[in-house]
Structures are given as structure tokens and as C-alpha cells.
Image 1 (cartoon, rainbow, N blue to C red):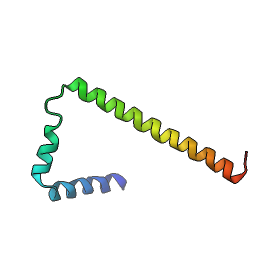
Image 2: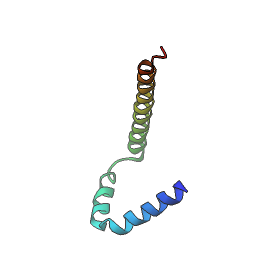
Image 3: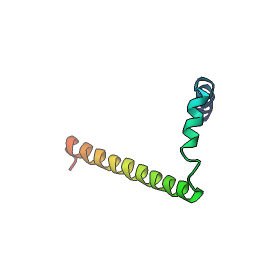
Length: 70
């Protein structure tokens, strides 16, 4: 159900979004090599994982402290 919602959302954005904006956004990475793009994606994924896993652990620790379980 979520996948269908995301697909519909993507279609709606494609219809609503001006083509000029999409073209300007795509030009951002036209002059980069494939390896540069892949390395950038890797760093983004690693940063996102560390951020949210770290945030989860911090919130879990705070929950334990506030509930008096430790």
C-alpha cells in the first residue's frame, strides 16, 4: 500500500513540477563522473544510517533514564 502511495505521489509531483526546475536539477550532476556520484551516495547513506541509529540509541537511553528502569 505504501509503495502504491509513493508511486502516485511521484506521478503527481511529475505533473505539477515545472519542467524547468527538473532540468536545472538534473544539470547539477551532469559534469560529475559516475564514481564521484557513487561515492557521494555512499557517504550520504552512511551518514543517514549513523544519524538515525545514533538518534535511536540516544532516545532509547533517555527513555530508560526517564522511566527509572536503570
